[in-house]
Image (cartoon, rainbow, N blue to C red; front, side):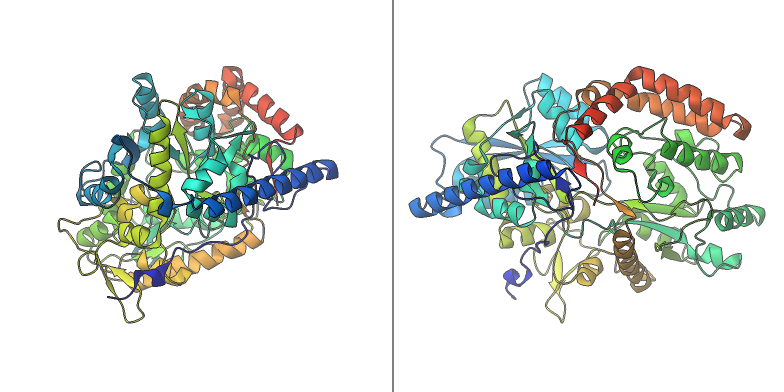
Length: 581
């Protein structure tokens, strides 16, 4: 068997998002983006960074001298410790029980038993994360680790008292590999809120692109109506959608889907580039849709137009994700988007239901439309993957067990096994010595959703082995009719998004180095408001659009949005936000 260490975790270089003084912990690294703040603020940041780095170096020297750093120093706990680890329960058919399967038992056998730790997995509903954690907190049953992709959720948990602060130097002694990965990727500075250390952050290679989310469309339909490729500009797209309707190929080409709130209605296409920094800092964070902003107005006006022209199902507000997926699979809609993986249920199901159909990947480009919009501008990922904090209800031993688990999971062999499974069953090596997943494996070692990602995302955001093209090939389906063409489409989109990033059209959201209390207080209300208001705006007669938008934007502001705007503005003016490149 080839040595798994040939596939050591890829570490990215210098990341590209900066944060100002006030956002660092006692172990902050330097800024990774161009700091556009005043010189005095920059000097303060650099001084704090230098001091923090020296402190971390001293701590490293001390732990090395005493031999007390890392796994070599670990001993079993004298009394059994329960480590409660969150894992997303996505409700996806065909995956093993998220709390009890071969891989949860593998972790217990290879990690827990060795250190007298009982590893218990706590299911978290992916579509209702905040409610699940709130219920667990109310019943004093929080998992030891609280983890999420979105910074504002962690900030809210800190504000609500779910998280405890911790000493980063102590974390570094227990988990030096994890700490070094944060340091190498310039992530330590994101570990603090209001000057206190709360978070550990997973690695996120290739974060400036969003290639792992792809839109797949009916290439065969476009060919039927005389198109060689998917049009870029809006007027051309309208003509294409109308032709699909006129020729009876589908009733509602774009299908439609209900608004889920958090992260919905991303308006990056309709922003003014280059962006004004304060507008970006106040209105650009996607966690609460910025109803009332001009960016959001332009976005919803386009949605209103799609609806009024009949491109969207008039009952779209009743269609959830699974129904939208089923509509695509059954041949009712033109396109559907999803995260790529070696096994994609909707791609396989599509070809089973449409043996004569053919899919293609919608590849980005840097076109600027006639109205100034940028069709393929997009929200890039954060420089980090999952953020993790530690429960305020946990004991010191439980938190130490969590640190041990994260360090253990990041070791090359352990991470490789969790990501790829067992050779000969879950994967095989190709002629280049790279792992290739067995697409139809259904044995007792079957992995969870997206190759076990909901277990290993605490430390890494993507499966990695080889070059980026190798990574993509390993994470796209290989058992569908035009697999190679689809894979090449994902590769082409990766390089297209890299080009968009170079041109300033890959947007990192603003992060705040202080708690935005109004956001925590009003977020649920505002998201519920938005779901209701945006449907009224989209369904309004085009002639009534502006009046409807303005009226509901005022209601939105009165329900708490204005307070969020005011606090974000204050954070920006006080130098407590990240900056545009």
